Image (cartoon, rainbow, N blue to C red):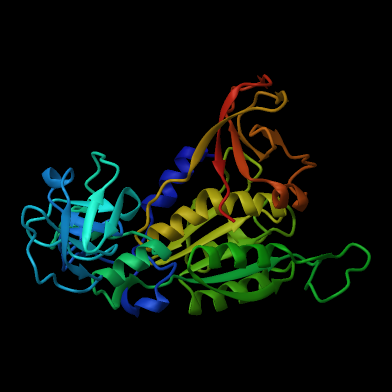
Length: 392
């Protein structure tokens, strides 16, 4: 059994970068940039008005000002501003030469083409040329995951064809005689296969391409057949169940027969102790416990960082500090413990009722993980704790 920190180190050292492909801008949301994006223009391209108002000299605001033209956004000014003159100007329009401030309409009055400033402030209300970005600057760095805001930046710099990391191909396998598919009604000792669909959703949220291959029965042949199939059509294989020390847990042995090098077989974490990580060249396998909570936690803690790393995105999880709503008692031991918490209306972290690794409801209600180290026993109510936000 290795510590979580050691397991994480082993997993992340094995990351194999994905190839690059070009995607159209409108299809780039959620993708990860495969190269730096340089701005081809200054932003703003010129001094621009930040308000609707009058462009004039800052020193002239106490005198009557004659309007010489009206400037709309996208129009190049024709007139320069001389002492005693101004131009009507709209938000986003180019500031005319000679002007060094814009007086808001609300701070002025106009009659017969003459403007009187009624309220003098220190605000110049100008967005200056290249104050956001200069042409040639790195606008977005390699490894950035594209969202709505970054998509707008790509459009603003003319990047219609976006260099993006290819999606890793993910194969998902469940194991266990007790499993039936969601459309089937479970009888006797059966349960529905929820893990595969949870993993499918989590994988999609990473921006990957999942393929669900089905349920392996608790036989060596069934497990071997599905893993061999997964090898032929995926970069990463996610397996839930079959990784413990039970009589019907064949995954670690089968992986070795299939040519995989098993690097991790057990992690000092609760839930999720019987976790396997194996490699075979540029193919990788995560074998996770069959309990839904363990699968959820291990994906978020190990699989998500690995998949994002394959695409070049190494952003760290988001942690926030919040007060604990009630006391937590934990037995000291040899494993870290991950506790599901949710935020109450007072902004405190309260633990979600949790009846063990098979309790699916616990994590459907949770907002964050609270990590408790091996040597921690009791955590008092009101203690400021650092919790890791769950990406849903």
